[in-house]
Structures are given as structure tokens and as C-alpha cells.
Length: 514
Ligand code: KIV
Ligand code: ZN
Image 1 (tube, rainbow, N blue to C red):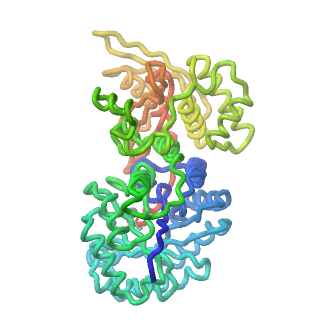
Image 2: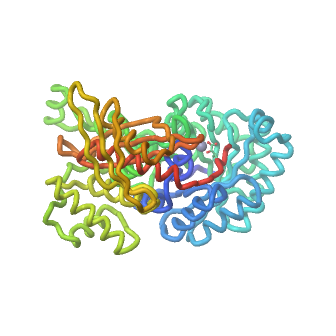
Image 3: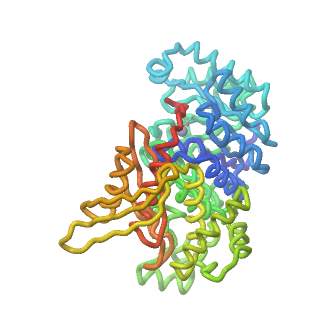
């Protein structure tokens, strides 16, 4: 069978991306991202792992009920319970896919599964057979594929295709592969497996050696894969997954070489990147390809001169083609509720109720009183803040007074609500942020450990809001709290309280690969 020219983009930000420590998202946050992925015309959205927790199940169900254009997928281990749960969560989706997997490498089979290869083969086939009753669109992954024995892989993959698997996804689970070998392996598997042409081949690469994008593209060009699994900003376990923005723009920019068609609306890439970064608190490094703040900035005189004479001298893509827009002042102090609501719509932000619009508008007015120019990024941040606050109300920021002076010990006085009751907390510290966290802890006494602190300017200039991410750890759980405010110490207090709220919501979930 001749290979199609259509490259399928399978986004797993909401599943593999969410497995990144601290990146867990609420149902509403996932739904916002899913809607953005649909706007970007992603072919398949892996919305989660339905059997992991009731929260994951509900999020997949909500996405399956709202997203109409993309295929919605749930991951499931190769057992009837997980598969039935995935099918139930996906039921409302017009197009649904069940993605089942089992490890096939000697190491994983022996040490993790404690199963014999023959048992793994049988379980893989049974899982696909069982999944077929719920949908015709079945994806199968041999986990740790790149470290599995080829003869065994041939038997497993031939078996699952015979049972009805329509996509075979070849994962480099631990990011161990190198491009040429990875591509050649897929090519050999496709040649050796007699029914290989009955399935679309896919790649799923992790970035431990910084090779995820290169491996994915080799899987396509050498191996003949026609689906790439990827995440926005390369989010994902450990060093992350293949970055969607990078593979998509490589294929589009070098269409002379790849000769592949994509369904993606690339102008939605930067808005998606900002949304994922704001929701998860994972900042995008400035020199990150395509979506980093410097990706289209030309600092050197020679480059600037060249760009002014002819843009193509130093630019291979146009910033506007991936969704970069000049920071626009969109609203101000005098803007009314209707203008605000319309801007939310233009940004693709759909709030669930008029009550939520009112709460966001109240926050907007508060901000507009303190900050003359309000940018799209400010609106996105305030909606993210509001959603965090709605999800869990255990801790809520009220006000802060802080004092620091050269030669003096910084101190902070934070007023916040704890279970609906206002408390006044005072503390000192090495710096104003330390004093603020100490003040909050003096009352909340959670014992959470701050493992990462980062601060970013949301827009340009010193009037920009600061967006603070605080990663907190407690009893082995890691969460990210995000807070934004023109005052970075207030943003820090909000981020810390948001993190405590997440730690407080006792989400118990399984890691599919755990
Ligand atoms: O990395 C991996 O192997 C996975 C599979 C579940 C596809 O995420
Ligand atoms: Zn993975």
C-alpha cells in the first residue's frame, strides 16, 4: 500500500504532558486547552487516562462532550477495566479512540509487569479485541518499544493488528533512541510484519537526550510513520515529549523536503503555548524554538539591518504565521463588561456561567484600577487565577503589606482566608518573598516545601504584571501554584496559596506507567 501524504498530529499535552511533576490540571483547565487544540485543528487529542482517577474520567468526559472536530482519545492499560472506563468517558465524543498499551521490553516485562513474554502477547491481543466492541479506532503501543526485541515486537504487533488495532504507536519511552536507528527499526518492522499496512504507524518520543523531535521526524521520513505524538511546549515526563510546535513548523517550513500535508492552523500555536504555560506554571525558555520570546527577536545590528532590507535574510518563518502578535493594549479602565466579554470570546476563553464572567470582570476592574494598559496576556492570567480560585477555596489571598530596606530584616503581613475565615499572618525572612511565605506558613502550618520559584513578566515594560510559579512538595506530591499581579510579592503570595490549594485537594491518581 502506498503511503499517504497526510501527517496526523496527535497531541498528548493533557495526558503525557500532565504526567510532568507539578503539571496536573483541573477539569476546567483541561477543557480550555482542549478547545484551543481543537481551534488549532489538532487531529487527535489524548485527553487523559480515564482509569487514573475520577477527576481524569470527568475531564475526558467533559472534553468528549464539548470538542466536536478532533478525535478524542483516552489512554488505558491493557485490561478490561481500564478499557471499559476509557470507553465510558469517551462515549459522548463524535470521534473517539481508545489507546491501549503494555510494555514489551525484557526489562519492563520482567521487573515491572512480572510477566512472561507469552502472557504479554496474549494480554495485548485480548485488550485490543475487547476495545473493538466500543470503537473501530484503536491505537496500540508496545511500551518501551525502542528497547524491545524485534522478533517479539513483530509477533505482538502482527497479533494486535489482526485483532483490529488501526494505529500502531512506537514509543521511545525513556528517550534512548537515536534518529537513524529509530527510523530504520520502524521501517524494518513495517517490512517484516505481514499485515503492517492495515494500520497507520505512529511515533511517540521522549526528550531525555534532546532527540525527541529528530527521532520523530526520522520515524516519519525513514520509517514511514504518519502520526506524530507530541505536546505543546514539549511538556511531559522528565525532559518532556516531542514539541508540537517544532515538528509542525519543521514539516511546514521544509515542505520541500518532507512533502507532507498537515491539518494544523499554525496561527494558534503561540496562543496555545501561552495558555499551557500559564495554566501549568511551566515557563517557556526565551530561546525555545518557535514559541520562545526571543524566537523572532533580532538583537545584532547586522541581523536587524538584513531584516529591514529583506526579511528572508535571517527569518525562515514569519512570526505572525505561528500566532505572534504585537502586544496590543486591548482594554482599559473605562472598558465595560460587554467589551470584556467580547475580548474573552476573541481569545477563545469560554467561561461556564455569567457568574464566572462577573467574577473575572470584577478582577479585571481591580487590575485596570492599578494598571493603565491591559494586554491579552493580562486577561489570560486573570482568568487562570480566577479558575484556580474557583477550583478550591481553602486558601484565598486578601491583602499584603511588606517592608524591606537595605540593612533591615524584611517582614511581611499577609491577610488571607483559610476555610472561609480571615487570618492575619506575620513573618520575617531573608528577603520579601521568604518573609511572605514564612508569614503564611506561621498560620497555615502545612509544612510544604518550596522546591522551585520562578518569575516572568507577562507583557513588556516595568508596568508588566509579574507571573510567579511556586512548585511545592509535600509527602511525595508535587504541585505548581501560579499567581500574577503587578506587585511581584503579591504575585508570590497568590502563587503560594494557589499551590497550597492544589496540595489540599487530595487528588489520588494512578500513573499509567507506574
Ligand atoms: O512513553 C510511553 O511509552 C507512553 C505510552 C503510554 C505510549 O507514554
Ligand atoms: Zn510517553
